[in-house]
Amino acid sequence: MNRILGIGSRIAHPDYGKGVVTNVTAKMYWVTFMDSGLETIGVDADFEIIEAVDDEVDTVSFYEIEKSLREILQKWSDVTEIVPLGDKWNGGTMTLQPSDPNLAAKEIPVKTFFNKIVMLRDRLRVLEQKINSNKKLDEEEKIDIQQYITRCYGSLTTFNVLFKNKSQQFVGESSKR
Image 1 (cartoon, rainbow, N blue to C red):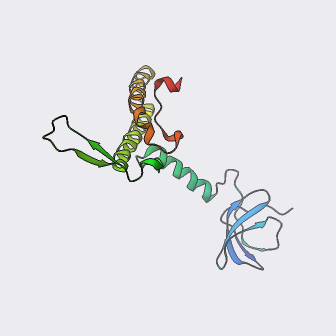
Image 2 (spheres, rainbow, N blue to C red):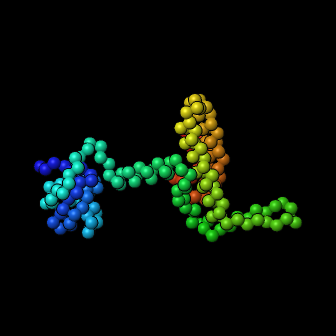
């Protein structure tokens, strides 16, 4: 068996032309060719080695790097995931009616209200992450603050009726047990 080429190796393939190895497994190369784009070829396929880069034990594909970066950004930023509103609420409005009949009611699109609720949930999640990674708080202080956040989630369970997906709803203290 030929030696395994590392990521960054340059090859010339009889069908695809010149390309660069962008990912490697024991049996396959992912090669980005100048003319035909990304192709997978077997490690024992017929090709000419233009420049070999030695394989390293901990090579990581661009896909794995992109996936990790996406997970890190999702975990540590306050960029919200797409959370769908329940179908029956699409296009709906909320009416806030004061008890004084001389005062005007306020109508709010349900979607606008829902987006505010989702933003609040996401900011509570970021707050949790910042608490958990804080080096100055001891474990007891972290647990104490976490309990307050859990109670906040519990107070927000009233709005679970707005969520399309149950997995994205608020979970309070009794549900976590």
